Length: 174
Image 1 (cartoon, rainbow, N blue to C red):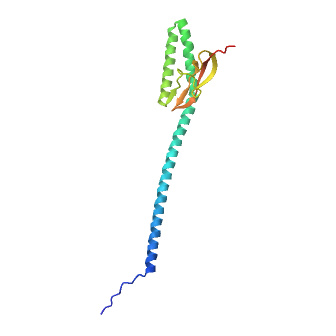
Image 2 (spheres, helix red, strand yellow):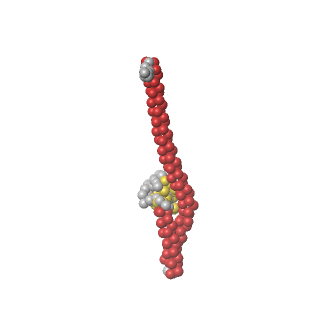
Image 3 (cartoon, one colour):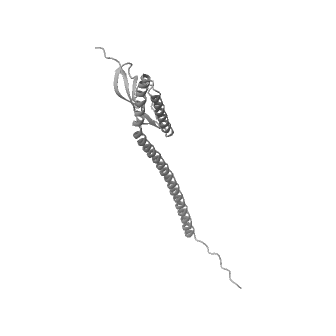
């Protein structure tokens, strides 16, 4: 006759040890999952911050480039203003054609600025120190923009260059 092995009886102490090991392994697994989730969240936050910094850096580069070109626009405006005055006096076709050419250059330049998200600062409003730089005062309504000396520009609501203006100031009575 063949003897059959009896299943070993697991004593109570061994059973508690197995359960402790299972509980410990379960806790370790939960900790690992939590660490993994935190790592994923940290990575997503880092990626978002890097993308935001990249966009801000691009805006700064665009702002710097545009700032270097703005004096050209100012000179074109001045040339048009002077030419308009002399064209009226002299009535020469040649000068009028030249003015049309300059006007086309200005329009093209402004279109490029618009495509890049650059907008001209509105000067048909009262003086706002966040958008305008007062470079002179004349008699007139308080804080009214009387004359625009240089146009100002914004990139996504960030002032690249404030509009340089002359504003009205009430005359002090003595």
